[in-house]
Length: 331
Image: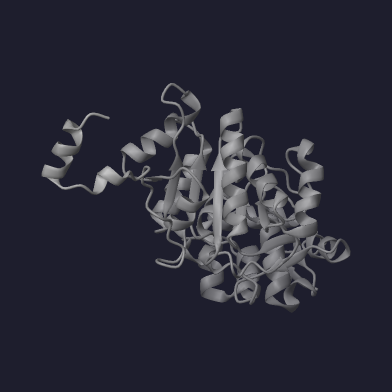
């Protein structure tokens, strides 16, 4: 047992490996904390944890305060007992796309399939409004099913509305889907989606950088979005108001050089106004179906969609003189 400033003790099991130390880090630090990123980069996860809990610096005091009222080994032990995997950078299953973030997650907690390594190459984030319309739900489900049938995983946030429709669309065709949560993977949110998340965990993956037991909060939802945006090959927004959180995901994807698509809605629909503005601003490309999404996000050439054209009539191939003659002939 290593004692730090007498008020905080670190169990030896926590200091035994980078994995256990990173699990402890996730219990005392909020996601996307640059202080944690800097400490781990300078000292490594184990020595960085010791340094943080023994540092007199006011900027690091919060870590010691949280550690003093936390069992630093509890989350890892809970995960072990309940079959929850703990991924850390360097694992073969790690989703390497999240390493593009300035503050990548210290670890990821996963129920279900732990291998997320293929997401950067063959996955699409499908996100949108929680207050979606039947039009949006139908499109999100159809698009998710279509891209899943083409071998892409569907990643979303398990929220009401478009997220739910996207997960269900992928599940309906036996495709893989990944739900990224803002709270612990043992706390289904929203509670009404407990059965859906259980189903996703049985055939896909439920992922969070928050340790078991943590509740979702508004800041954690926004931080969750950065994972969805970077672990995937690209993002598609289906229905989003001008202040929708899904636009935050799209902006993050664009910032990290992921393609972004937006599905148009009725021009009178406020719930699609964010999609239309993203296209007008040049932040997203208009897409209308799964083929166009895969064309945007997939491999150039291999995943290209055919160019849409109208019906071809025999007279379309006539030259100028022949076309005039044809037009003059009585039908």
